[in-house]
Image (cartoon, rainbow, N blue to C red; front, side, top):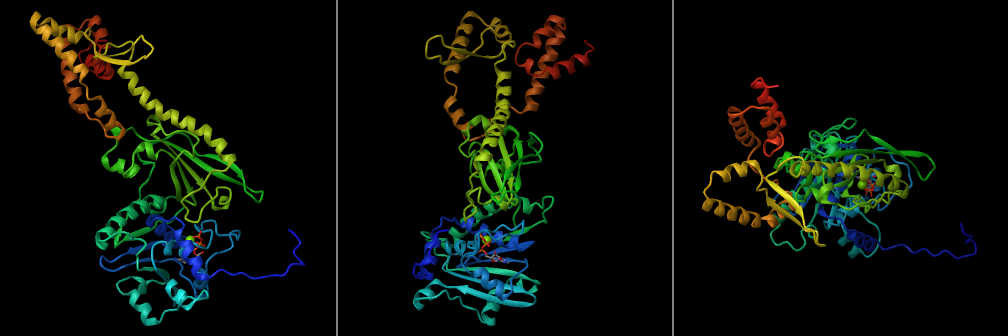
Length: 497
Ligand SMILES: Nc1ncnc2c1ncn2[C@@H]1O[C@H](COP(=O)(O)OP(=O)(O)OP(=O)(O)O)[C@@H](O)[C@H]1O
Ligand SMILES: [Mg+2]
């Protein structure tokens, strides 16, 4: 430290109102602001959290059944700032001593907190317009008991042994630009619900080591949204641990789990919604970083790899503890964090392997469509010129097509060839491409129907001729070649070896 002994000290304190106003604009969304308040409830061991916003009232209340605060603790909670370096409980989701205030004033004009602990109910309010009129001082207001009672009507607060209510009044910032309060609030809450379902999914599902949390929005419990759909996905490897030296010198481990999602055709609409909400699998692939089990950042490869269509089934869970906050450049909103250099190096290799696994799913499927040893209905060609453009034509030499053509007269044959040529030219390829980009599952006949017709055709062919040559042929031509197990089953049924 420099020696400043001979200098004169001049105190320059900020004006409370300026700090309050400046920290309103930290970039919170309504979703991240409410999540920040819920972080505090979880850190205070809440098991149940009620979010309520009566349709016609311009306020929002978040009530929890956590530990609550004494008056001294409440005063500290309302204070702007906290020593960043102070040790915290391992499970504490806070860091800066700002969230309660900055998240609230990004959305509302008046913040009131009521808290109950050891049988005592206390309350404090920050009202920036009061402070502005007063002209100076960091003065909070303490509420009268009858005022407190008004806020507790229609809530379960009185029956709780301990807990806290955070009240946001005058939601002008949350609803800036909206003319219809009721519909704007209801839309906003849909989006908040989706956000909370994802960010706190491990608490909501009561994962091992966490006690189950219930969050109710207007008395309706929200369900967890597991971005790995663990019941259906494939976990590529066991948990891997990367040891990272903490700034203090101790080593802390970062746990990594890699998942491969099922392909789209195996996902229901609801499952797809759980995985990517209004977005797409391509956009939401990547790392999912959890700090103390709370989802912090997701759907990014941290610029270590591109997001491609074929890598969209890969997602990687990263678990970090709050002791690495500085290394990960955690922000106050808990919505950004960057992996430090030492981790980036390790992650790069993991991404390649994971993306490759995802790509293999698509390659395996496409291989079945253009396998060189199988006679397909469609042929893929590459032009000899330097454009090397790809063409797809119906394979006129396919035995089923040849068989059919043999039954036609010359005139019918010419018409049929013309028809096939035209069908080839008018495949709605661009629309198919757009559908795939939008991750629509392109449905052909159901597997059952297709298998039934193919079974029937194989039986008919074998009725005519079940020689070895016919069976060998069946195994090499589409559509039968795609069903080797079906062929074997039918052969067994007929006693053919
Ligand atoms: N619902 C609550 N129940 C009990 N204590 C709370 C609650 N909300 C806030 N507190 C107390 O108030 C403190 C300040 O909260 P605030 O969100 O401003 O900062 P923080 O959680 O410490 O850090 P961060 O800025 O990273 O969120 C908390 O550390 C906690 O001790
Ligand atoms: Mg906090």
